[in-house]
Length: 293
Image 1 (cartoon, rainbow, N blue to C red):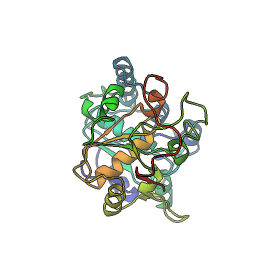
Image 2: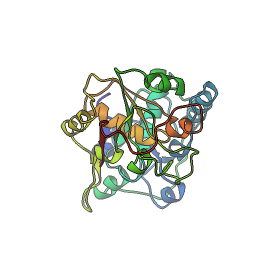
Image 3: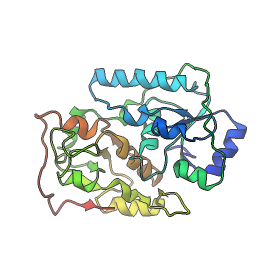
Image 4: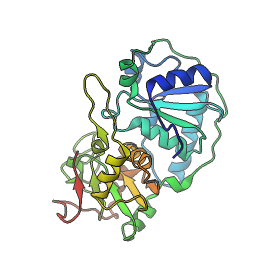
């Protein structure tokens, strides 16, 4: 992972004054309208788009985001900086944006560490003015090795050399709920067979009234990963419901030096809708590690 993946508010303010930057706000449009970073473009689809891993679904997603990101003013020259409200209440949406841009091959992408809350805590300016970015031609240079398909995940279940990491909430892992959108939003509840669990919140410090939530230190993340059998050399396949929380874990693990990671981006939303795919239900195997936040 390149340097400056996670940048703090004061550093971003300095970068904005010295180099071309495109700020991407991933929050709900109504929240964005109430205040955002100066010049930030709202792209809610970074969080809301439900992808599928079929060739048609991948092509549709690539086209959608190349158009949206080009419309935001990204040409390959500008640094893209993505933010959400806070790192622990948006289901990893800024990290999902980071992952999408890396998958599309964009050369320079950063995440505002701590999100909008951290920017406000630093006393930096916000605005309700709407920007009018100049449309650019977004350069696509796909990195397909970062994103798994359903057939690849099915094959990975049988591979003892990899760790398949579920980062959903506990209620989804144990099969009490199918998704964050409702207990029965998806047709089946459960987990991918053989997966281990680290709840996505566990990668972050919760924050306080004075300090926005942020990722834990690399040492803490490596220790957390070791509890489910992940070392810096371990191949890791990450999934959640639609790739957001998985992207949060992807960034955390990469920051800690665990870089052989891929995301099953369509995740449980796709897996649960195909009755031919195996699932586990009921109480998890007590011998399989599960780390709660």
